[in-house]
Length: 351
Ligand SMILES: NC(=O)c1ccc[n+]([C@@H]2O[C@H](COP(=O)([O-])OP(=O)(O)OC[C@H]3O[C@@H](n4cnc5c(N)ncnc54)[C@H](O)[C@@H]3O)[C@@H](O)[C@H]2O)c1
Image (cartoon, rainbow, N blue to C red; front, side):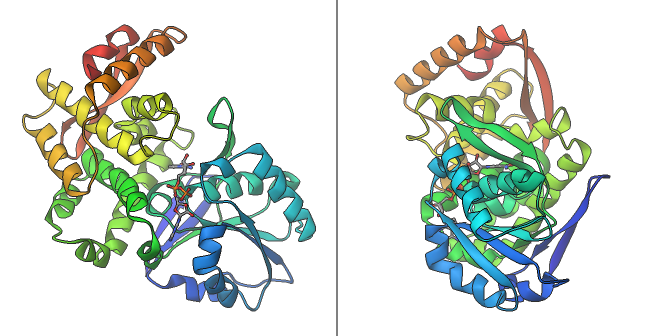
């Protein structure tokens, strides 16, 4: 079993990574009294893997709270439903919540845990690739508002994270690629060996065979940034490589044309192509990114008309904000830095 310790000063907890760890859950969650466990999940995961959890927790008094799959469940309405179900299950502050699912369930359930009765201990069991390498680490929990994503949330860390790579076998191909964009991002910003390793896999089967190590690598990189800058006011921003343009793409298309990972993929390629032309980035880097994105079925460019429309949208957006913007650039693969630029210069980096 691979483990990582997250040390934040005010709180420490472990991340466990192991194939099949779910079957050992009952042993890992030491039963101290007659506490109840509410497992928050979505209907896809419940159908596919719900029994594994109920079997593993057969010694506990547990109940499921099942929400609809997809981003629409990260809403105040679903949050209210979750609170009602927690009341129905008679969950108190000495009980526990488990979030069991992708990033949606983790963010929604984590936020419910942080607010219900002023805070209930919780564990994350992430099941999508995005959740296993990104959203379950770092303590950011939130729901969306109609006006935008993650507008209501908090920093609330779990007592432990249990990552079972075997869950990835049932994950849909597009969601898998979506998560791979963030895996590639970790290679770009911090670890050229990870990047090369990803380039080397001959098949998805080979990649899945190594998944424990890959997840461990990604989680260690995120852990380091989170420990240094928990509240995301400085260094943690490096994790946003590719996200400035990526967010604009997602938002412009109302979150339904490109997935988050696809939009970030385009953002990573575009900014690196530009920074290379400007002499900031080692020549050839954008081609390496293009090759790896293609290998993992991710886009690196979008249609010209789309590009123009997005730049226009950024222009409208930028009028309402301060004079500077921080962007993340690469010196080379595995070596990144934050650059503060004049907001008016933003087009130089994306056009
Ligand atoms: N908190 C953070 O730091 C952070 C970081 C990144 C992303 N996020 C959030 O995460 C969300 C996206 O996460 P996501 O991509 O996991 O989305 P998701 O939770 O909607 O999961 C994607 C789809 O895959 C299904 N699924 C998940 N695991 C599965 C499995 N093992 N087998 C079969 N199907 C499975 C889900 O039911 C869903 O339909 C967004 O809301 C985003 O804002 C949060």
